[in-house]
Length: 244
Image (cartoon, rainbow, N blue to C red):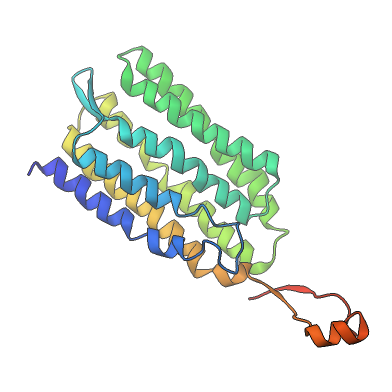
């Protein structure tokens, strides 16, 4: 078995670890808010499995590029920033704007590996501008929105924000020394990116899973007999409270 295949198999197994805790949130007390969290490790696991079988890999400028990697990023990284914005209580427009900037960052990044110099550096520059836009959005309106959230939400939002903000800084550097300057071969890039991907996605899911009780809304139940006898509960309508 080729070393790069082993790397992608390990990446597949690593992503699978994040699926069970995410699936446990589907239809749980937390409602639909996290019903799609499973897609982050789930899509990534599928794409890494395709890469392990060398499905979708192409040669650009003599450099091995697995297309499933960019499909993975185009689908999952907007979810990562979207959930971060959601936890922080950001507005829908801010959330959509950051997710769109993220998608464009990946699209321009794909263009950077599909073209040769000097065009590839133009695409890289556009992708980097989108990356900067994401950071400005996260540490601007998203961070400010988190200040108005309950302490438990604020702590989780700060954790997710910093986790994405700092970890993702490594990706542009990896591209420069890999597909850009080609100082690191495809196998070396596979190892580095697989490690970064698993580290970026699986702990992210776990952080939300660990804090799931902070999003549970408990309805104070009113016995049916009381409703039938009085027509209403003496204590008034049920009140939703947030567990801490």
